[in-house]
Structure formats: structure tokens, C-alpha cells
Length: 488
Image (cartoon, rainbow, N blue to C red; front, side, top):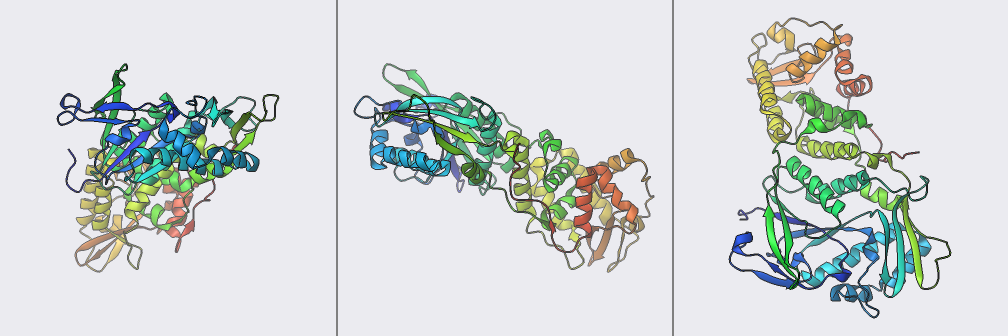
């Protein structure tokens, strides 16, 4: 049951609808409904109920290679009407001459939206189009159309993009559309339709994103229970997923961007203070992977003996994009955006100190990344700072001076890393404390240059040096490009 003020978004994977018949979608008390509820439609979208629910449709770019042509029209009335209304045939020919994949996707999105709105006219619908992989054939208003979709350009004949491209684009595109939901809002994933790998990848991506964003998740599927009468019965599943987002499974060695790598490592070690420097002092612009892919890919008419006036033979090709080959890179960017959005309102004072109250609020807002043990370690460190005896109100001192702590051995890298993790990054020789009106504030500070090597030992030379630059710098530091890496 939907809670009061709880926002609900539906995400639905779609297949190729030109052959879809009208069916009975049954949602009875045994299958999770209330009483007997039967809706006749060509799509499960019609069963979503209240008009205030947003729908995100996920379709493949091969959807414009339809198979339901009977010689005069398409079997599905909505498809036939939208094909004619949008004049898809003529638009397709113009796109082939321009080779613009971006124009092609614009037409695909309008077409999918048109078909969907025949079933649900009043709902807010958004469309995500992913690349299809393989050879597809059908009839475009009677003209035979063949696509070899998802080819990797300059990688040999018939070599297709890996599934990681689709996972990466799905993760990035869905995240952008649901990232502003509030904790406890609900995402319902409908897997009734869609080619097998699209449905399974979407399921995994949505599970990870709802865990990251602290959202409720439900999975629904209308299962064919009587094919002779075209009856589909509702089933609902609640995935068994950990409420904590497992940031340790992100392979940081795969991440090239130093600021992203620094943030992921900090989350993995439970080090809060470095996150503030990374998010607040890095000058970095978001990489728009979906837009970049749309511009990179090309749609090309194949010049071979099959091409006649009654055959459209084309391919969709893309130059290799390194950032999309490894989904860990995209997930790193998503986590960076999510975390930094959480901390952007935290203010440092005129002396670049952060209050312990603000640090506690960050730990609370990012608690889905941390185990209970890590949260306890962080809180113990904050309480240690607050119990510093050798600092008066209005003073600032290095942490070891405020508590008369011993120094540790800088020559032992393993000891430094162990200390850093054990104390959640609050090491005595690099943390400066200020006490003001009985409140405590902290920042990183190097009173001896040698202590800068703590970060290079813990994070590695390049990432550690970036953190040193952020700590020592005034204002913002340029942290990276907003262009994806290209494979060669």
C-alpha cells in the first residue's frame, strides 16, 4: 500500500510492440490486488492506476525495425497510428542521409511516447533508449528494413558493443531521472516486456540505485496464465536486497578520474573529512554520457547488393568509449554525484574549519554506505575530539597537542594506513582542532611538510597528491575533464 506523501515511479522495459494484441491484465486478491480487477489493453502500462505516477519507459533503438506488418497495416493499432501520424518512413530516409544517430533516437523517443500515450493518455512518461545488439529485420510501412545494431566501429566485422555499455548507459540515465526522489519513495519495476538481457540488466541497475538512494523497490510481472484467451496475471516481488549500498565492490583500480577514486576510497575507509575537501574544493563538471553516446554513434546505410528501393539495410555503429566499457567507472561517477549533492550545503568557517555537528549530519545522510561498525568508529573519534582537555575556548591546536597523543612512525606505510582507517581519517598529526563557544571544529593541516606523505601512502601517489593540493589550496582546484575517455 502506498504511504501518504510517498512518491511512486514506474519503470517499464519494453520490447517491440507492433505485434502486441489486446490482452486481459488480471490483478486479483490472490495475486496482490484488491478483489477482481481486470483491464483490457495492449500493454501493462494501463494497469498502473493513479494519474500522478510517473512512468519511465526503457526501449531499444531497434524498435523501429517492427515485425507486425500484415501487408497493409501493423497488427497493433497504436503502432499503426503512430507510424502514420509521425510519418516514420519519410523521417527514416532523411536520417539515413544525415547519418545522425541523435536524430534517429529523437524519432524513436517520439514514437515510443506516442504508442505509450495511446494506453495512458494522462500520465507523465519519459523514455530511455538503449542500444540494441545484433541483427534485426522487419517491415517499415511495407519496406523491408534490416539493422545490424550496436556495432563497434573499427573493431572488425560483426563485433558488437559489450553489455557493459548498456548497463552503464542504463545506470546513468535512470539515476538522472530518479535521483531527486526522497528517502522512502517507491520505484516499481515492470518486467512484463523486454528482451531478456534488457530486463535483467535493468533489474540489477534498479536494485543498486534504489539501495544507493534509500528507496523502496517492488518488481511486478504480468505472467501469461491462459494464452488461448490472452490472459496475464499480476505477480509482485520484493527483492532481497541489502539496505546498505556495498561501495566495497566498486573496483577503484578501474577508475581513472582521481577525484572520483579519492571519494570512493574515502567511503570504503569510512573517512569523512576527505569527502568534504573532495566535494567542496574540486572544480569538475558532470560527464553527460547519454548525450556523448548519442553524438558519437552513427547510423549508416549499408552499400551492398541487398539494397534496392524496397530494402533499407543499415547499421548503428559507435567508436569505442572506454568509460562505457567498464561499468565501475559509471558507478563511480554516480556515487560521486550523489555523495557531493549530500554535502554541498555544508559550510566551512572563515578559517576553513568544519563543525563536528555538520560532520555528524553527513555521517547520518551517508549511513547507507557504512556498516554499523564504521559508524561507531567515526562517532568514537568525534567524541574523542570533543573530550580534548588541553584546548581552551577560542583556541586552535593540532589534535596531538590538544590530547597529548604520541606521534606514529611515518616510515611504516602499513602502520600509517592502519591508523588512518582505525581513526576514520582523524589522525593526530594532520588534524587541527578549534574550540569556539564549547563547539568543536576540525580541518586538515600540515604543520610539518613530511606529514603530507600520509595521504600519498594511504591513497596512492596521484590521488594522495590531489588531496594534498585540495587541503593546501585556496579556492577550487581543477579536478578533471568533462569528456569521456575514448578507446583506441
